[in-house]
Length: 216
Image (cartoon, rainbow, N blue to C red; front, side, top):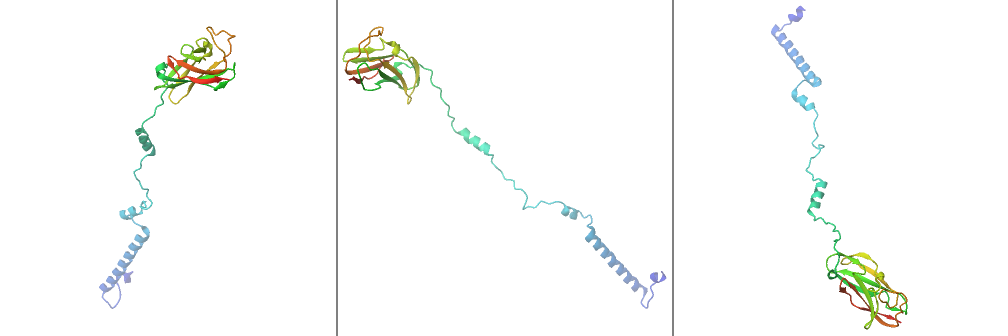
C-alpha cells in the first residue's frame, strides 16, 4: 500500500503520478467508448433513429381518382330521356283515316264465298276505329246494279275496335256469301252471275277506291 501511494524509483514522484494519471485516463476513455458502443445510451437522436420509419419507396401513393359511378351518372343525366308514349284514347272519324278494301282473291266461281279485307291507315295521329255496321259499309255492284251490301246484311260486319296508326296495319275482314242481298238480308237470294264486279267500302263517310274481281 505504501508503494502504491509513494512510488519508488530514481525519477521524481511527479513523473510516476503523471504516468498513473495518464493510464487511468486511458482506461476511463476505453470504458466510456465500450459502454457507448454496446450500451446504446439515451441519446434522443439515437432513440429517434431507432424508431419505425416508412420506406419512401414502399409508401402508398395517394392520387385523386374519379368515381366511375359518378361519371356514369353525370353522363347519363346529360342524355335526353326517351319516354314511351301511350296510344291516344281518341276515336277515329272519317277525316283521320284512309280506307282501302281488297278482295281476298280476284276470281271466284258462281255462288262461292269471298272475303273482303278492309284496311284503315292513319292520316296523321294515332286513333281508335270503332268497326260496326253504323261506321263501316261494304258494297258489291255490277255496273249500276246493286248486288250485295252490308246495309242489308249488317251481321257481316265484325264488331271490333282497331288501333289505327302509321306503319301499323288495322284490318277487318268482311265475308260475302256470293249471293245477292235485299232488305233484311233474307236467305234464299240468287247467286251472283258470272261477270265483272267491283267492291267499295265507306268508313264514317270516308270512301275507298273501287276494286274489281270476277265471277267465272
